Image (cartoon, rainbow, N blue to C red; front, side):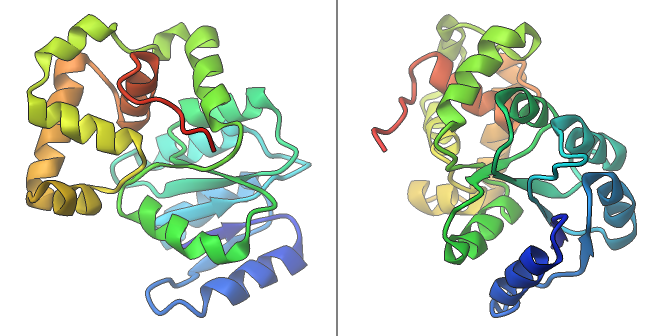
Length: 219
């Protein structure tokens, strides 16, 4: 994975936490988001952990990384939200960022979040995540998914998969929960996105919240 943070001590601390995990390897570091694209191209990390950058942090920079590498082959981006305003986070989500964590989160929670992102899940544990989804729908009509009537196009199994995707589970976890193979889960996800004209997993999550198929937790 790649670490991006403008503070040397913070990067060192994050690296110290992550290097204790046998299945997570920090392959490189970047100071600013403007350095991420080059690092991604040369290092090919599976996950990029991007912290708030007072000089250059904006969602457009992160989105550029994703577009430049291609979504399917690019890294899953996990953003630490600390002092970042809604507009920047909305831009990041439009770019396909798959994870939002509060900047003051317990560092011990990072390994699990990184594994989830690497496995294809979304991680929306920032307190403002649900608010961001609502803002995204109101301010970015091009990302708005089809209405709830379109859910009738889905099979019951596809609906099950959509609910679990919206709840942040990876394909592997969904497969275990539904007693399916991971390949079958991927197939269901692909077909439900095709039926509903959704571009990616982020839009699938938005759809589930907008239609009330999944409701925000009280926490």
